[in-house]
Image (cartoon, rainbow, N blue to C red; front, side, top):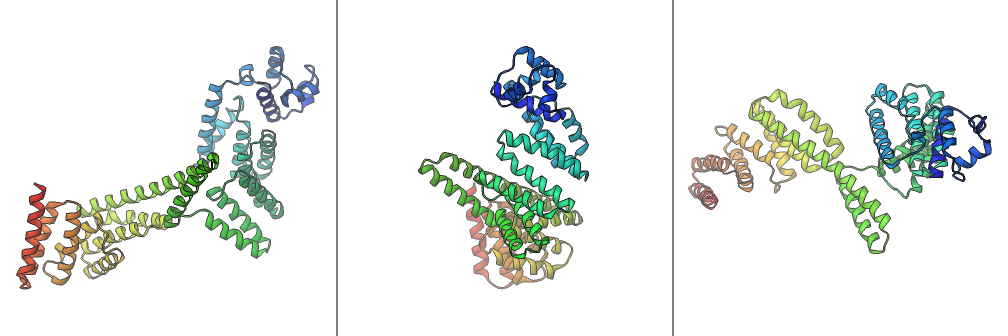
Length: 420
């Protein structure tokens, strides 16, 4: 109890800009305040009341309960999200209304410093941040100190103090590594800042090294999938030797990476589905911005399989507006990228192309129809498969290949019979 209330008294005292002597004036000795803040003395009820009045707060604020602590944590989450989404006015209102909360003053000073920095009020941002760093150091909030030193470096960098900014970023790196963490967005952010500082200070070798470190800290697509698997493998190995904490950390990082990848893939696949619906409605123009969005997303995700699936739909848009040669060229390219990999997008695009080719290119029609029929049967789309079989058998008959036409019809009959 004494250490918690002492911590809150110190936070509020610093927030009000008071020294220990000023807080103690006509109440107790400065030495007593020092002992209370250090957790070596427990204040009486009367003293709590007097200190609360001097600190312009309530006794309840000083006497923290777990329920209040949880509520404060959730409030900090809302403020942080406001800052991330650049809703600064709402963030400022919440910060101003939160200094009477029993905890969270380190975060509140940090958030206020971010607000000042966003407004380019660099001196105010720096001074506010120093209070946050003092409080975080007192409370050994090493997990937060990395973020605080990143912001300090950003403020100094914006002010043109490159050497001091470099020192702040080095501090951020040390605190981040003290948490036994490797990789991730935060490490990449630190390394990018270190690289830029060193570049501007004409230290090219270090700048390049940090740039490489940053690139290896955040990976997407296949590299990210590989890193996710590696993290989980290491976590399992740590469990086998009794290092549960390290195992849990690595497993958590693997889970986060997987969730990010799953988000990208779900977003991408939702767009592919929307494009197919628009093509079915012959709303070609509406597909263009969504295709552009998919290309942007795929630059981040870099998954070859998703890129190929998008390419089939791009080809279909060319076929739909009568650009047959361009459409066929893109279809050939997409098929070559994954000849044995069925997809709904491939089926959709090739079925459309087959109908467009009926009276034009029999050889391409047969090639595309065979692949589309394979995909239709794979996905159990029997109505589409029946239609494709009819087109394909007629094409074989026109070429005088009765046996192949019979094989196609026999195959679809078997599929229909087994489905019924």
